[in-house]
Structure formats: structure tokens, C-alpha cells
Image 1: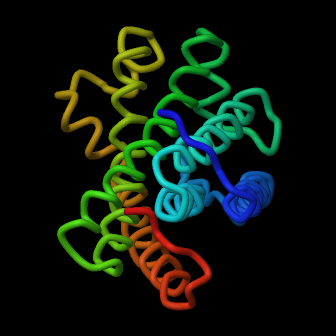
Image 2: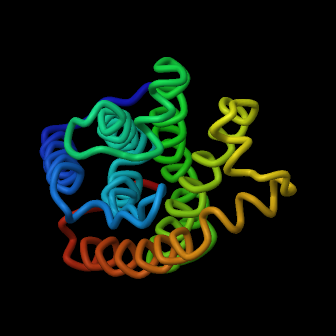
Length: 203
């Protein structure tokens, strides 16, 4: 994935990165409920993917993933689950927190481009917003189960249930809230930027 940003795009990427960091290190980015958290940091990642393509989405996703991992060691707040996973295996904890978010941002850029080619910008923005939350949850939980599924901590959480049932009940209302908020806000912001001609979405 080779891509060169112009000055305008670099400025936008810097702005979105600053927003991500602000959200990550203030209550704006997370709503903690039990071991999981409803995160709104997926929204700037989706906006980056819409306006800057797969490369921009991947960079924003990487920033999100890094801040998520840092919560495992108490930087910018602590994640109850992240702290436990870090104690079990720091390297796997980094992979589980970082890679899904970067991959999410990368794929969102391609999703937006694909939808944009067959439909209008508004629908493409809405779809990208929904996929941002959906893929974030899918990749995060897949990595959690694959990397830590055999640990005592995860076995206690799973409690002998079917993996699919466990995932659905574990993320529950959190993922639904993320999908709704991400779809609405990303759709509105992305379309507003396009109509204002401040950003020209890449096709």
C-alpha cells in the first residue's frame, strides 16, 4: 500500500490524530461498562478512511490501537481487561489491541471506495461508519479468543458456553451502541465535509 499525502491531507491527518488522542485520554473516547468499553474512537478512524483512503485509515487505526494498548499499562486510563491480558502475555496483548484497529482502518478505506463506486457519498459514509464499529468488534473479539482463549482468565469468562454465544453476550449492548453512534455520526460528518467541499473523497 504505497501512498503519498499532500499538504492538505497531512493537515487533515494531523487533525484527526489529535482528535483521536484527545478522545483516548479524556472521557470523550470511552464509556466504560464492566470489563468492556463503548468506544467512540472508531469514528475518527472512519472519517480518516473516508477522506484519506486506506492508508489514512490504517494510520488513524494504528494510533487508536496504540492508545488502546497503552491503557493496558495505565497510560491514559486503565482497561480492566487490558491489564489482565498484559500480565498474561504483553506481546499478545499488544497484537490483540493494535492489529485489529489498524486492520479496521485499512479495510474501511477500501469499503468506502467500493460503496462510492456503486452508490452515493451519503450511503458510502453511513456504511463505512457502521463497518467501522462492526469490524472493530469482530476483529477485537476474534483476536481475544484466538490469542487468549486457552487461558484460565478467558475460560472463566467463557464459562463453557459456545464461543459464538459467548461473544454475542459479552459484547452485547456495547457493540450495538457503537454501531448506531458510529453510523449516524460518521454519515453526518462525512457527508457534511463532502457537501462543504472541504474534502474530496477519493474514489
